[in-house]
Each structure stands twice: as structure tokens, then as C-alpha cells.
Image (cartoon, rainbow, N blue to C red; front, side, top):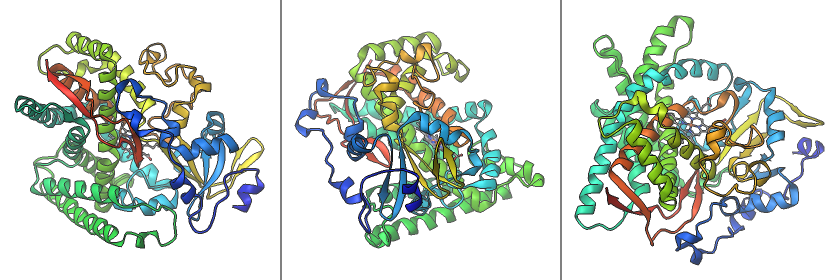
Length: 484
Ligand code: HEM
């Protein structure tokens, strides 16, 4: 801490042992609940709502400062030029992840899932995992997505015909995305596949519902029951996944499967001699990582999209027209997906305004020089993606408007003045490995939904985007869904 201060980094004063957590919990967001009922009152100006403490501290300390989670100092960054200079000389393998998060999220990602591994281990994991997400493999996985999505839409038809006026699409899509990621990650055909899926969902609820005091010494004793529950579920999931891996190894030659687990096993099998392979334990952690890293984020991208399309029926209409022209009413030809350009602009604009991953985290594994400053080895780093995506100085005066066409001219950066201003999937070598899978799933599910239904906002919707690890609608997303 002294070293960081000596380098000129400022920040709000912490107290022991909670650091700035009390101040964070006491900072109310600026949204007045009574104004949330009318869709005209919905604002996409999120930063002061979801991170009110960062918005307040920015006013005093600027866009780069130090704050404390318990006894852990974090370097906060919402300044793209600083971020560029900081990251330009650091390779993916030389970044660490904050130890405090590695401990806190162990039940989700294990010790050796790609999100958490570092150094040469990270290189080995990434080497085996990246080819599994090749375009040919993604196309094979796309066909696994159609059935769960169609089942969800059939359920909606039944609910509507039984007179249900509105549907909480967030809950529906999250359940379906969970099933999709389970099918694409480890398959549900093995009898234990379904059991893993159920237990992963239970673990998700346990982890999300427990009170979180990240960084506070002995915090796991604040909610011992929940922690015990999560650990127990974690062990059960590991055992079930190990049994699936074992069964696949037994029947290797008869039926290698083309889900992610099958592809990683195949990659490990082929690359075993070069030492670039994953152990059974590591495969277990990767399956969990795909589930926790990949299902809610994609579900939220789709959920926020339905909100924005409900608020902007002209875009809903344009996407439906594009689907008609590119895909038609027939069975989906996944090779045509690259032509769904407007859908891509919409996806990017949604990820900008409502980024499901609201921050990126790193830990310095060496002293990093930024101009005259030095970020000492071991410093935790917190990049505020919501702040970057809503910064008018790099996006312009229309930063809080839904304008997918900004990605028409500039498909990568949406016209942002700084290349580090648009980071929905992170940056550098550690950028999200599942981003193309997400794009595929987004297009499959949205195409199927828009072909069958129209969407408008229910008067019961309360706009309250909140951070619960991801950026979620606090009260769900009830929409009025009508068959076309
Ligand atoms: C809308 C959907 C998604 C969003 C917004 C998202 C976002 C992110 C972000 C911000 C990171 C951190 C990058 C960094 O630190 O620079 C990340 C990493 C990662 N994501 Fe995603 N992700 C999504 C979907 C997925 C899917 C579908 C999968 C897998 C099936 C996945 C697997 C991973 C993994 C394994 C990493 C760690 C990569 C590494 O450290 O090398 N993600 N993602």
C-alpha cells in the first residue's frame, strides 16, 4: 500500500478490516424507485446506478485511483489511455488474477479453470481450448442449441394460450442458456450429465444468494451454512464430472463426442506427447468454468436485447426483416449467420450499454511502468467496463442512447475514439475464449424468438440494473409476448 501511495496513486480512505466496503454498501444509487414504472423513464445512463461509489469517488480522485475491498487494495481504472499503456507490454501469460477472487470463486472455476490459471499453465490450457472454439466446431454446437431454445418457445406458446399475459423472459432465457451450455460443454446424454446440470444450477443459486464480503479476513465464516452448501455441491459436481470423463475414456474409440469436453479430451489425446494436454482434474474445472463463465453472460446479453428491442420496435422490425431475407422460414442454415449484420450491430450495442461482465480483473505479476508511475508487482487491478462504455468523452454526447448503427461504419469499435473504450469481452491475450460461441448462441436463439413472437415492455417491469457478479435486471424482465 505504501509503495502504491509513494507512486502517487490516491483514493478514498480505508478502515480496518472492511477497507471501503462499508462506504460502498452505504452509497445509495441515484435511482428513485417510483420513477421505474414507466418505460419512458427508462434510462441507459447506468454508471451512477450500478457503481454509485465509483461514480462518487471518480469526482474526487479521477479515473485511476486505489480503493480497498477488506484488506486488499485495488487499482481502479476507467481511463482508456492508462489501460492501453499498462497492458501494452504485458503478455497474457504474465497477468495474474486477484488471489482474493481466486479464493472467492473457487467453487465456480476450480483452481485450474482457464479464468483462473496463470503463467505457463495458462498457455497450455489456452493452447488446448482455443481450437475447440473453431468455426467448424461451433457450427456443430449450434445444432445442439436449437432444441432447448425451441422447447422454451413452445412453452411460451402454451403459457400464452392458457391466458398468461406476460412472461419473465430473464428467468426463461437463463434456464435455457444453462441447458444450452450444459449440452455444448459436457452433454446431457450420459445419465450423470443431467445430474451435473441440476447441481451446477443449485450451486449457482447458493453462490449468488449468499452475502458476499470479498477480501474481508475470515469472511467465509459470515455465512458458514451457505459456504458449506457451496463446497459440498462443488465436491458432488466434481465427482459426477469425473465419472463422465472416465466413461468417455472407456468408450473413446466408439463415440468421441463433439461437445467442448469431447473436443478438449480429443485435443489432449492428440497433443499428449507434446505435453500440451489437460488432466482429468483440469477438464473438470474447465467444464465448470464454461458453465459459470458462459451461461449467464450469454443469457443476459439476450435478456437485455429483448428489453431494448421492446423499447425500440423499429429495430425489432428491422431484425425480423433481416432474418426473413437471410434465413427465411426454413430450418436454420448456420453458414448464413455471417450475413446477419444488423443483428451483430444490435448485439454489440447491447453489450456496450448493458455489459453482462461489468468489469475485468487482473493482478500485476511484475512491476508495470505507466509513464512516470509504477504499478508494483502484486497489485490487484479492477477495470470498470461500465464506466468505459458510458464515457461521453470517448463515445460522444449520444453515449447513453441505443444506436446500433454506430457499429455499421466501425464494426469493431462502434466509433469509439479510443480502442480500449469497448471491452465487452476483456482485452489482450486473456480476452474471452467463448466470444464466438456466444455470438452463435445469440443468433440462434434470437432468430428463433423473433420468427415466432413480438415483444413489448410490461407495465410491471421495474428498471433496476444491478450487479450480482454480472449486470442483471434486479426484478427480472416481464415482457408482453405475442405470437406473430
Ligand atoms: C456475452 C457473453 C460473454 C461475455 C460478456 C464474456 C465476458 C468475458 C470477460 C470480460 C472475460 C475476461 C477477459 C479479460 O480478463 O480480459 C472473459 C473470459 C473468459 N470467458 Fe467469457 N464471456 C462471455 C461468454 C463466454 C462463453 C460462452 C464462454 C465459454 C463457453 C466463456 C468462457 C470464458 C473463459 C474460459 C474466459 C477466460 C479466458 C482467459 O483468461 O484466457 N465466456 N469472458
